[in-house]
Image 1 (cartoon, rainbow, N blue to C red):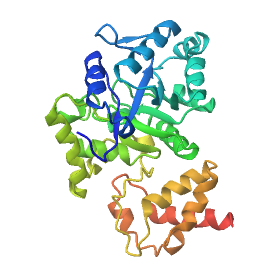
Image 2: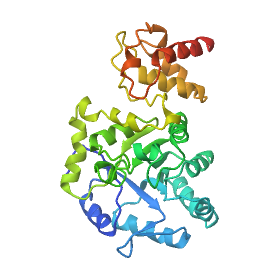
Image 3: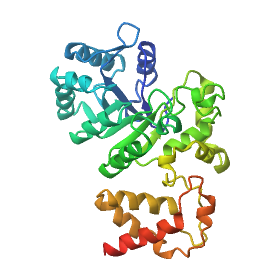
Image 4: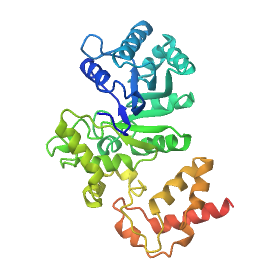
Amino acid sequence: KKSNSTYVLNYSSFFSSLAYGEAFAGNRDKVLIQVHFGADYRTGEYGWSTNLDVVRASVEWQLEQLHTDRIDFGFIHCIDEQRDLKEYINNGVLDYIMDLKKKGIVRRIGLSTHHVDLASKVLDMGILDVLMFSINPAYDYDRGEYSDGGAKKRMELYRRCEKEGVAITVMKAFGGGKLLSDDLSPFKKALTRMQCIAYALDKPGVVTVLPGCRSVQDVKDVLAYLDADEKERDYSMISRFTPESFAGTCVYCSHCMPCPVGIDIALVNKYYDLARLGDSLAREHYLSFEKNASDCIGCAQCDKRCPFHVDQSARMKEIRAYFDEKK
């Protein structure tokens, strides 16, 4: 149906590309299409390739099926090993994407990967606008098949994306559904969809979560997040599973709130961490707050509430001293 809504289209099969092409005919200006350069659906089955001829043929086929002449997000698809990236570059696929961007056919460049070092290497190239990355408590806490990098290293990646203006779109927010099951969860305790989505959205750089949906009911279950209250979104129970090496680290979850003097403790922490990474705008953001670390009265109510055992009142002193020195 025609409406004023904008849709982000990230499809994953031969049949969905045909269906979406018909569904959005006449509404192209209301759809943001994401095409993965390396995914091939022409046979009706998912295929993956770094061969330039295969990639070009697949992209041209997708544009035809979707009845469009432009791609809003062109993704370097599923690069999880150094050799994959090397092949992608040597085979000319990256040059192909960059050429399409120069021509205005591709509007933004993205990367989908599950590995921190790969993401960092492509970020070093200075070409990314978007990173699709797998984020959930299990992977961040060294549990599961895509738990690459460890908690601290993964958080550094999220902060880097925030600093460099690279938007993160989250895949595998539910860990392939395992986190929603007591039996399958690596924590042996199920999380809800609301908790998983809230967890991902709290990470620096994250702009959206893209859960897989198999049915209309799945879509309804995910959209319920928009009406969920703070209690339903509260994922503080995962603090019981926090790795010892990560305990005492602020994850910007806001469970320490409310502050009696009105400090947004999560954002104050976030911009402090970004400023220390060299983000020149972080200081300006921090100083724009109506209340900041200088207003802390040391009541320690936040310390008692923090599920991740962060000494926030001590952090406020540290943050105040840091920004005072930078004046």
